[in-house]
Structures are given as C-alpha cells and as structure tokens.
Amino acid sequence: QVQFVESGGGLVQPGGSLRLSCAASGFMFSMYAMGWYRQAPGKERELVASISGVGGTTNYANSVKGRFTISRDNAKNTVYLQMNSLKLEDTAVYYCNALRGPSAYWGQGTQVTVSS
Image 1 (cartoon, rainbow, N blue to C red):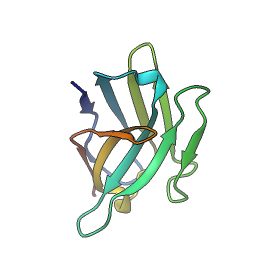
Image 2 (image 1 turned 180 degrees about the vertical axis):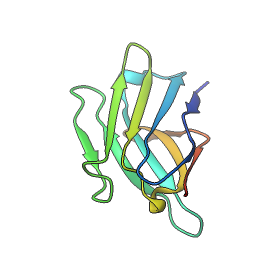
Image 3 (image 1 turned 30 degrees about the vertical axis):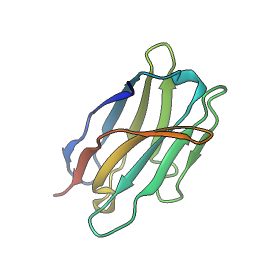
Image 4 (image 1 turned 90 degrees about the vertical axis):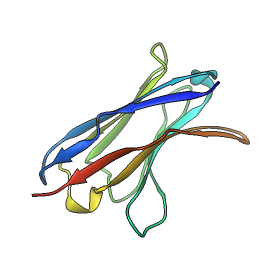
C-alpha cells in the first residue's frame, strides 16, 4: 500500500523559509522520480521541482529557480523541498509525487501560506 506523510507546511512571512518533507512507503522509492507540485486556488496544479531516482538530476519551474531546492534521501525514502525567499505567490497546497513510467502516486498535500 502506497503511503506518503507530508510535513513542513505552514504560515510564513514573505522572505521567510520552509522545508517540506515527504516520507514514502509501499513502493521502490529509489526507482521513482520524485516531484513537488503545487496548486493555488483557482489555478491548475503545476510542477515546482523534480528529482530523478538515480543520480539526482533536478528540474525546477522558472518561478522558483534559485529559491527552492529539491533533494532526496533514498535510505529514508524521503524527498525534501527547501523553500527560501518565499513570496506571496508561492501560497498553495504542495503535493508530493512519485513517477515511474505509467505509475504515478500522489501525497495528500500540505498547505503553504505566505502572508504578512
């Protein structure tokens, strides 16, 4: 049974930082590319960052390049998203995603609110 435990969301002021974590179980974590997506109210879900299973190749949305860092610990079956210099427009529900070929799994989401 695939399970995700997402944590680290919350309320932060503009310019602040948060670190999201997603602990996964029920599948071969190291074989899957992992990603973080977000969905703001009234908007479509968008890819924020992704990291390959082996080698750790990363990819970022232009809007977060230089501010967010995705990483993974295959020994802990966990993927992280370090978010710095947060902006009001980063407010969204952030979802953890695992992808390998036609198989895709989603976390339940964690709310990130950037507000002064």
